[in-house]
Amino acid sequence: MQLVRRWLRMATAPALVACVAMPARAQGRPAPVNAATIVQQGNGHGAPACIACHGPQLLGNAAGGFPRIAGQNADYIQAQLAALANGTRKNAVMLPVASSLSAAERQALAAYISALPVPAALPTSVDSGVSAASAAALSHGERLATRGDWPRGLPGCDQCHGPGGIGVGAAFPPLAGQPALYITNQLAAWQQKTRAGGPLDLMAAIANRMTPADVAAAAAYYAAQPPRPAPHAARATPAGSRP
Amino acid sequence: MKTGSAIALAVAVGVATGVLSHRFTRAHTASPATPAAAPAHAPAAFSPPPDSAMPNDEFGKMVRLGRQIFRHTGQYAPRYTGNSLTCENCHIDGGRLAHSAPLWAAYVSYPAYRSKNGHVNTFQERMQGCFRFSMNGKAPPLGDSALVALESYAYWLATGAGVNTKLDGRGYPALPRPAQAPDYARGGQVFAQRCALCHGTDGQGQRAADAQVFPPLWGPNSYNWGAGMAGIDKAAGFIKANMPLGLGGTLSDQEAWDVAMFVDGHERPQDPRFAGSVEQTRQRYHDSANSNYGKTVNGVLLGAHAVPAGGSTRNAPPPR
Image (cartoon, rainbow over all chains, first blue to last red; front, side, top):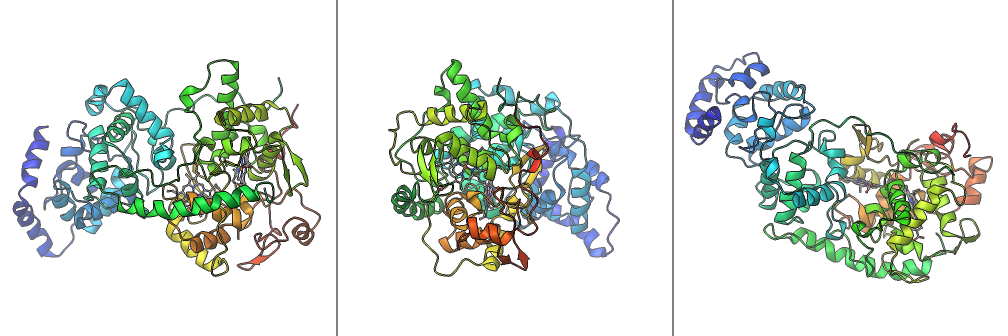
């Protein structure tokens, strides 16, 4: 938390970021990119260590609402860094960070971070905050996740984000095990148009059909899901045979 | 389905298309602070009971099994399922959604004459057809527990609906013929821009963690040439009302027809009624502008390179 606070202070001083970033760019010879070093220590010209906010294993930080990025799809990471840098996804903390990463650094980071291991269960330090959700909210969240609410035009979240919200391909990121605060913030960002609607503007349309209670329930539900698919559930006895 | 419900559809369509264009506007003018009102589907006059009202008795068990088969067909009725689709893929929200051929509207409409097989079909026989064609599998014998469970589920969803009534929202909306003839190339553009995100650039869908998240639209794991969805008109109606998922009603009629032409302009498993040759089969079962079977589309004679019908059920032991 110490690091996070220090970095948050720094993020509010873009001037400082800019002048740190200058010298390296001015020299015009691209230093070899070491993604692991950037993750642990920053790139030395504007981007702090990723672990400062996203946690020591990049599994996220529930209290701060910082997402898990370990194991995230590489193309998705690159697309988000680009959007955070060009402002189509507005975020005061990430704007200076993403802007100070070169294209080569973004690519190397995306490859490195996407390959980091995702544990079957998150450490308790990460998934704290989940326990606050009521049983009613969790069951409303489960219903939205698995079935949606079609009379209100809401598909089930899992229909695109995969069973248990584990994520599908480059376009549908995992929701499982993401901090509830992070999920809430993103849905709010689509409602307030501070984050571009994503492919087909789909998430803008969907977020705008959600009530505050829907948002809180879905966020609580996914925050409580294991970030890796549960071991294959025992197959049900097939029907279709006469006893 | 051709004539059995043609009148019902004609009536429903006027309503459906009117509402479709209306809800399109609403979806796009929604203000961010207040949640947008249900834009994706027109409210039907009938609404089925909530899942929470399923009875907790022996009958309720059968209803629940029916729902499981409907939503996870390959897992709960593997013997009869030849592809990686589920009933729900084409009958959205567990067969509840209006304009997505909902089960409650279907249940009260049988027995009915169907021109597809030239006789009066019971509800179970209607579902046998879906297993044989849409699921590219095998028809469960009448009275099989899979059909009994599905029938129980449909019956329960129709709670309170009158028998032999034409319910609004039945079937897929029938779209008026487009201004320009449906076109494969234009459809390909619609597909790339509005469909490939989920169904993949190759139309084979996407999987995650052992589950088929987005279903395949053509190829060996999709519905076969005998399926209703292989009819360009049926596919256009379904797509217009329900696709892209969550954005139903946003394609123009022309776009829906074009992309249906594109989707149904690809090879898929053989028609199980195959009559010896592609030409014969076209003549007997596909002699319509709505079928690409036996036509050359994009340089391919469709039906000539089809894998045999039946998919994964081909080598399975016959039902005991």
